[in-house]
Length: 379
Image (cartoon, rainbow, N blue to C red; front, top):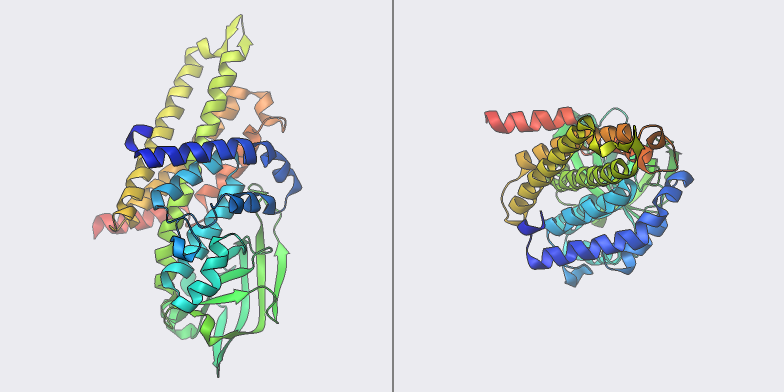
């Protein structure tokens, strides 16, 4: 697929591949076993300027494109969806939202240190009763002079237990539904803000999912992001970028699973020959390769549209939906080709299998993607 990339994009992809192979791949399984956010991975990425890849240089970033961000996600997910998710949450969701919707003072205060990797960001949207339907949000913000007073809780928040900066969404009036949702910055250490349950997850165990608790947290009015009642628009705009990142994760883990299956099938011998000589295995590999390539091309289209300034909501939903499904199928087939060895923790295939499921859930479930696509088709 490199033929579709510009020369700078090919160079960046190769640099990412080299970085991942030397700095992420050797640590990925150990980070997974520790079952806590791999902050070392974030620091490694900060050291080479990846934590603000798409942010302009004047705000501490590299000025990269969304195609660059997609390529980064693909390469990171070859080694670890957890690490790709840490980065996707930090940059693709929270940092992107702060940059695009924050004012100049907010950019200087929050975007610059986050882009440099000096601070880790989280994205506080999901609640136990408000996930796919965020209009049911119950976290509230009440104006009190020069402050907003925040009360409520968020759940399953990626990076939440280690984040320095949280882009938080709360409602200023529950009766308004989605029209009452407003965005704020909550900083670690603010009185009344605490970390609740840190989830014990099936997969992406090197990335945390935490409960965030808000008990009369007084947030300065200066920490409001965008206009009052416009938080829903901010959230949905950011989620398009987040879905491109998830599509990249799907392509990355599927690529890793395919590569592993090809290599294993060539060296594993049964009945006097490598199992790659059996037609049944060959057909599985063909189907896997087709899914990987199709997912890559769908995500590529969405990234190109995004960088051209075109609306890409339908296309990125298609890419996210297809790539998530492809990842699940390719990883399952790869594990089957590996047989009993694939089921053991000595190889990363079982980790790919556990990790891939999240792609069908976060940044909008597969069912939500179908609704988004259908709405666009029938408009």
